[in-house]
Length: 80
Image: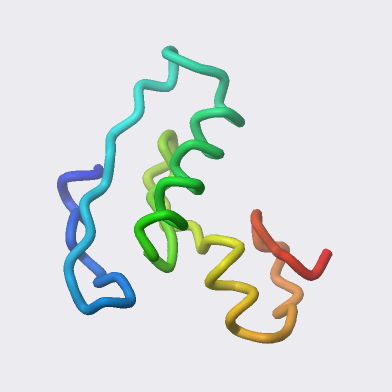
C-alpha cells in the first residue's frame, strides 16, 4: 500500500515526502503510529500513512494549523 501512495502529496516545502514502512510485529501498534507521526512532524509533512491500514492521518501540527476542531474525531486532534 505504501508504494501505491508514496509521493501522493507534498510537504510544506513543496517537495515530495518519503514514507517509511513499518513492520507491525516489530513494535506495538501505538508505538509504530507515534513513530510515524513524530517523523512526519519532524519532516514538516501534513500527515503520514498509518503503518497498518495505509490510510493517510493528519499530524497534530497540521491540525493545529487549521485553527479549530473539525469534530471528526481525528487521531491527533490538538483541541481535545
